Image 1 (cartoon, rainbow, N blue to C red):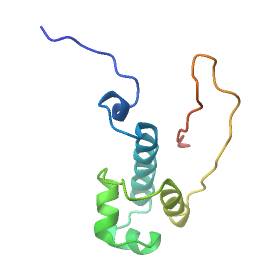
Image 2: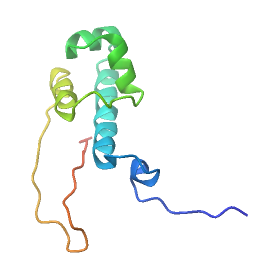
Image 3: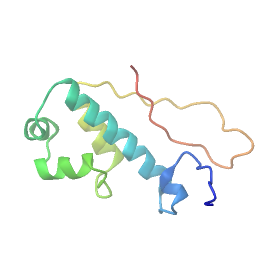
Image 4: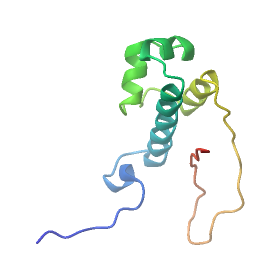
Length: 108
């Protein structure tokens, strides 16, 4: 019988990827970009023109290959696709954590 281990909520951290928090944020931003493209019924080519990158680079980003793309660039892509991007600085972190967290929340 295989042992089941509960994940942390961040698959990148669970498999030991460096910069796991940043990678999770980028994955969440890529999902929001994909959702914005679908909502506008854009082709990848047209979406790439709107966000200012090549279609192959956009495709790679949407498929999880975003190491060379900054979070700021991804937020700019969302803005160019007509989405508002809000940065909210929350209250202090819980005492059980030593650092704060960065997360992406999508409105319905």
